[in-house]
Image (spheres, rainbow, N blue to C red):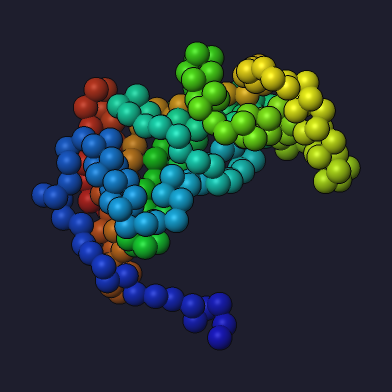
Amino acid sequence: MSIADLRREYTKSGLLEEDLDADPIRQFSKWFKQALTADVAEPNAMTLATASPDGDPSGRIVLLKGFDKNGFTFFTNYRSRKARNLDRNPRACLVFFWKELERQVRIHGFVERISREESQIYFHSRPTGSQLGAWVSEQSRRIPDRRFLEDRLAEIRKRFDNQEIPLPDFWGGFRLRPESIEFWQGRPNRLHDRFLYTRKGSEWTRERLAP
């Protein structure tokens, strides 16, 4: 079978305007809870798309770690490529795809670093291995081999033996403050349902888009 012949029909559900919440954050919360109960694999996995100041794009999968009316939060090494992009060009897009529900959500907006206090709370909620891993990895930097990481882990583990692991000054969270949020529901014949919320000051407008 050729790649061109790979296709599937989306038939699980539809999306009507009258079923949508007026607030896209509440609508996202509703869909996210449904993804959790539907046993979607890693429902908080999302594509984060960034661009350098000269427009060079870059995308990767990261994990959503919180959301509320203020925005969507994720964590990373502040020296990574994604963080450097965001510091110099603080606009980004998040994309969720929940295959099991035939749904997609796209979120676009401005990104800012969260406070060190917020990052510290999350950092110390992580498993010990993940805390150590944040110290070990110089994210996006070239390294000689796997042994380099293993030796570095042993060094860091010994350094913080029998003490609380501190939050690295090069690690923390970002929050994307949404300007627009689009909800996509797969439908037969590629005639999908798409609704776009756009922020206008403190209010949101909503419109249906062609698939």
